[in-house]
Length: 282
Length: 150
Image (cartoon, rainbow over the protein chains, first blue to last red):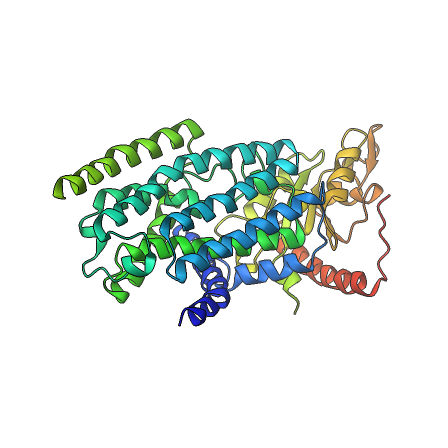
């Protein structure tokens, strides 16, 4: 049973992730009253990048991104096979650490600042992500995704504060405004492509596909909050994804101080109140 | 049709242009013409770009910059000289500091001679460039390509 879920995940996640990325670009274009590229455009981009020459500053920068790719898939694989939520968050952190190291290794001013910002972004979203695990444990008495998913009522009912904190840090994971500091799908005014500046060709394609896997995993986390009903979960994951696009188009990029401060404030205050409520409930 | 021609990413460099052509380049990226519907993105990063858009004539000051950007782009790549200044130097051709068009420094594949260009002309040039890009990819694969950076 688990093996089949894993196989479906390994081959399905990049397809779903790529289609979501295409939907993202189309919807974003419509919001800006443009035609927008075809839905399959992200696949065209990745296939093109595979055919391009791969330029590197140092050969080892590619190695770090390969580890990022493998560990991101590993994170999703743990999640979709019903693994331990704490281990999943740890694996995700490790994947992102390799991403940051790759950015530092490519030592150009742009990727250096991008890597710094990526590290700050990790600091910003980590508390909220841990609270998701803690909150779900307090309700379901298990860290295992396979047990959490079997909880009879939607977790959002008892975890609204934690969901809000998680929703607040989602733009970081989707690389959307207002928190697209380290890199984004649009060129930055101040640091070109940020952490991705020195990556080209096959490595860039690898990073893009890893990002699709990551998106599917993050939407999986959203699904967990509504897991009692499959259709409710899937539709809410889509709604959250569309909400991210609206936020992306409606907001400007903030400075890192504002990102870190607000993300921690929301996580610790609103998420914290939610946890105190759970404790009081017993 | 290859994937290469479905997702050409451009980088735009303003040599010593009067900004006339640059405004038109940006106009082509705006909602009315929306180059992104062909998958064309303005990357601003030579390492991600396939097409180099050069506007303005080449002089001693920007020669090394243009060459640097060109050399940082991964193969296969094409260069479009946008406007009459980038094509031949235009009215500035006789100036003491002007070397001439973009082809004095980098190999240009498509010329768009007008002053300034129209967004439609740029879209037309981009479509022409896509054909050349595809040919270069095949050449690169079969080993026929001469890497001609001067």
